[in-house]
Length: 313
Ligand code: FAD
Image (cartoon, rainbow, N blue to C red; front, side, top):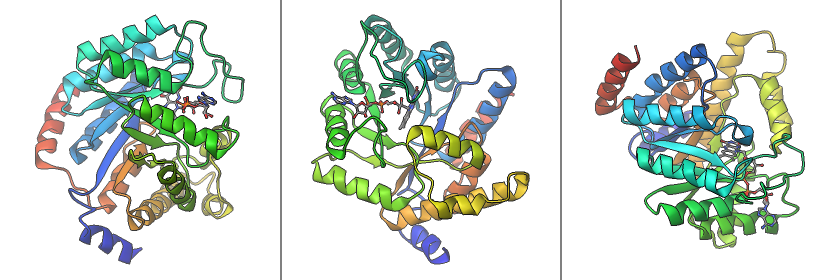
């Protein structure tokens, strides 16, 4: 580990060579809103390339996502990326959301198909007047607003509905051809799967950055449940690290930081210099990992964060 950290610093991974982005979800209650903004305030000085805000299943957070993105845009110097899915809305409704973002000054959308309204695992049926797949949405955003960059999803272990790798890669290629310039992966814990995926992507002639989505495990039981639905495997050695810690939140937090640092440093060793962190609206673990990676609060960003603090507080 020590050697890896030194190597990361030597390569400049701790400073300018390393890029991070942070994902948040729109808060439901005033208390959750407070937690989110405390987290944004803490992470902002690390000068992420962008911060993304998810879109609730079935479009359930359309207004809240918009409100959060809007507040980030108007109250901070951060660059927000709004997630948007095709589910449960007509093309006209989605276009109106996109136009609204463009007008607001949003210049980055994470374009997704989304899960069926009935939940993950149900059969996906496009809205009769809607965009059917993520590639259709990407194409619509890019043709309406070429100034908006579009990121898309990618799956190191294949999307659960893709029957084989050819289907998976064809789909990613369609999204790239439609105008996506970055893919962010579903979280994974086995870096070999990510490396094998990068080889497949390169062999398919896809050359956009495939940024690893990293989830610091705040709660192993919850993560395991979600991973099962999302088709992300949990290696037995990984599960063993959290064994017996169900009632011991303090040790769990320490272990989570160590395990996540181990994963990220191994990725740095494999040549990765860009990470997307699923923060779950909590800053501590992500801040610690970024610190270990050599990232320090930028002076300018600190000043911005302070003014953000004044606005928020
Ligand atoms: P797509 O890329 O459209 O693919 C879905 C499936 O359809 C794949 O199996 C693909 O192979 C198949 N497919 C597509 N086109 C064709 C075709 N022409 N022929 C055959 N098969 C095809 N969900 C939310 O609700 N809100 C969010 O904010 C959100 N953010 C996410 C962020 C990231 C980084 C990731 C990785 C996922 C996110 N999700 C989110 C989850 C995502 O919505 C689900 O995984 C969903 O099931 C698929 O959406 P997608 O954009 O990946 O779909």
